[in-house]
Image 1 (cartoon, rainbow, N blue to C red):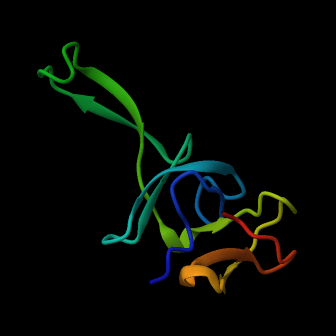
Image 2 (cartoon, rainbow, N blue to C red; image 1 turned 30 degrees about the vertical axis):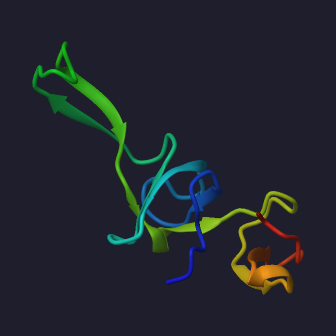
Length: 106
């Protein structure tokens, strides 16, 4: 699977209770086909006191979404878009390209 969505990209949620919301990708889990998006799919998790969480209690955190439920937002045209790949001549570098405005994403 090509890396269509990377950490730091802006994505829009396509389905579910958070449909239509935009956010920045915090992490990508390629083996599970999931992404974690900032302030999207926030759940409350009960944590026991431990070395990492001294206080314990109820913690709010983002749960991962399936990668098929989000779509990349082009930084230039601000539209949901698919991404294409543009191969350059120098050292065979591959760049992601917006399919709508043909602008290089990274």
